[in-house]
Length: 30
Image (cartoon, rainbow, N blue to C red):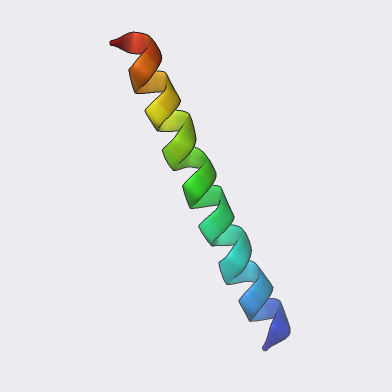
């Protein structure tokens, strides 16, 4: 149960990280 929770938390962090990365990328491109 705890392992699944950690996995979901990591997945969330990764998606947030990619979202910020994409945002920064678009700001630099524009």
